[in-house]
Length: 360
Image (cartoon, rainbow, N blue to C red; front, side):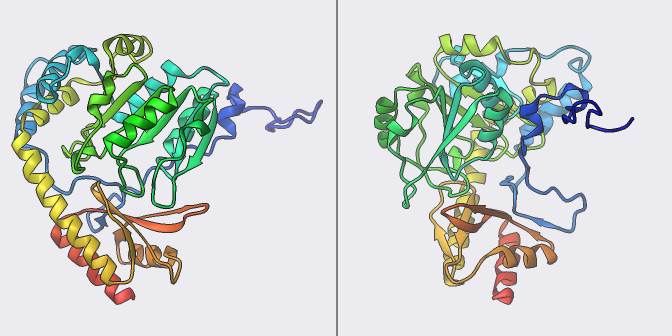
């Protein structure tokens, strides 16, 4: 009898013993990834420029050498020492991950028990809720202020772990290190400062990782153009890192991502050049969107968040998609709907602006 309903009790059975918490989850939905080359893709905050040539050289060496038949270094020792030198931190304060999302998962598994509490400000990265639900924890959120300021720390007093993206997505806004340090002191709870976009910002909170309650996460997907290889890392006190190592997958980063990440970090000149181009294009995008009647939030990331007070933006999103330009449409209770637009090349942004003028 092919039915999910028990003929005896009438109770819905879970297929294959799937956990009830998983069945009711909505799950995280990534940005759309078209499979042909005809689209202008400004919806997932990828870097529009190629990675450092050193990355290609390092990958070629790994493929033609002896690395692929052997397991990779589970700790990423060479990468950690390179990152420690560039960032001026202890290599033992670094943990590697399959993208910074992997680090977020590891932190959740380390700090949050089943029936615990995960908290975050909203609107922000929707994956945080999914991580709580996978862990079997409760999820609590509190809204940012109307100026994207932090809510009072006491609202998170029961949290086992607090996530704070800084710069935030989708707003692109950033809390200053001084304000953040004071807020953390008042909070007194473990917190992840998610710095996936920090290389496009004016400052960072890496020094706060000296606090035993703090884990700072970084990604090489955006600023280093390695979204396709999946590599990120976390920074915390060495004693905290040792606990996190107990719950990470044994070989969570493959040999190719390790050599590529190390090579990317070693070429800081390439990062500076790419960053400068993106910031210049970001300023031009913000200025032109305002001239077109959009309410634009000043960004510290490689994307821009914009809204219209005179109309909903979903029809604009749909029309752009019809014209094969992808941006990210998002809607949040209390904040309305908006478009998050990744900073592309100048040519891509010119095309976007031209189409927005035509749409009106």
